[in-house]
Length: 631
Ligand code: 0RA
Image (tube, rainbow, N blue to C red; front, side, top):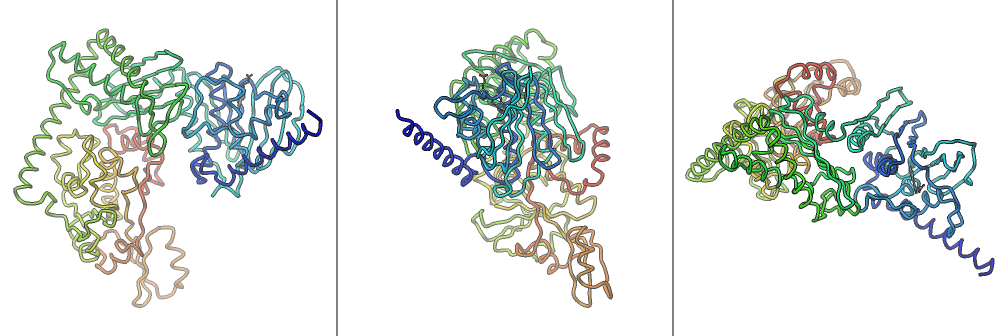
């Protein structure tokens, strides 16, 4: 090869590199999902994954994360350090290749648990491409090295900064404001994932510091996912010490931790290669099958009663399943469902064998758990019978919709809305204020049951709840079917006083525990009734948010104004209610979202559960925001 030829060859490679990064910058969502706050934080998680890979390979013990004063973030690990020697083909330092070529990282390294096709694992080059600037500082081969990049391109040579006997990688970057909607890192969002990673990588030390305000936290769990399960059950009455199984086989690693509490809901979290598989998959299926089978075997062997269902055995169960496998297949709408079919049988066998042994060795705990499970089964059976009775009854009485429901004419659910309205008088006004073509009203008269403290039979004996379930149409629990949803928007409309806030929380607790998919699917809303009416002459202006009052008063000019504070929907006439809370073009709605499922579970446990001490603490700590409860 002549010198000339070689030169043009390198140029061709450089062009490929630039095209690569340009593709990432043109369509960032293809690589990181979206360019919202979520995508922004994803950049940090991407770099973190490289550090935890080093940990899993046995080369790293800690990761330090710092949000710097200038808004950039640094992630430093004490792993092997990204290689700095010249890459023979590219004629560039390996670190530059890793940071500028898509998916180059893996080529240097036989990573055991490479994350592919999922949410993470796109590589640090993607982070580089989407950063205004990025600096890599590497300790390796006795030296400290540094290189700077802007919008994905190297703007300096790899420089030697000094000597060090340590090894590790520090990546500091500022996301590109041309790409992201906002580039401000949220400490709470970061610590949620850092804590999760510390649970999932037993023994790793993860520290974070926010230089903008001095906040800092440290996470290290020698108990791994067993500590995770204890954390999930923190404010609940735990029925026994947590149980932990681990098995490594065929290059895969399987871990399961579980602990029952005396509550009525389950909390099963699953992960593959530290990615939260929200949609479940084969590892979860394997676990569920084995748990039900093992318990039914025990019941039969010890003649403790009849067969129980999956719902029964999961009542009060908190569980974390973590599998690490070389070639994961992620499926489903959000690519968070594990598809590898071989995993189901392996997990199922491990759980079945180990649970059987555990029950044999701990007969006291086994009997206690089975008593609870059989209670659950009886309650479910009673509820089923009661439901069948009412179903037959309502069929006889023609139509199975609740009598109190003022339905809409529209039959297409995607165009229909349901208002759940507190109190008789407000419901009356709402019926007049609505557009009956597409808006239905369901009044709540009696008390809504606190489902956090009640088992399924009581839940289904509560009139307000059964009315709600039949009006919505989807059913609950294992029978839940989103395709049967009768209204695209379900709007909770309560008074803006303490009682209203309480009813709103009770309803949200119900939706969270029994129709979580509706929240996840974005069908549940909270209507904001006006807080104030500001009268000027005959005209009345409505204010729905406390912080808007001052502005409205200023806009109207302070003279000759009378201010009325509304406490209940009942104080409004139908025209006023239509404008402020019912008509789509002028009302204010909040969509209910689950930002952090673990925190949401704990909030409901604390707010609605039995234990008073954590509730006091919570209300005290949140005294300012308690009114705007954000699930
Ligand atoms: C390529 C190869 C090796 C390690 C890494 C990349 C690596 C990347 C990052 C990103 C953040 N921290 C990191 N730590 C390591 C293997 C190096 C070897 O074989 O010595």
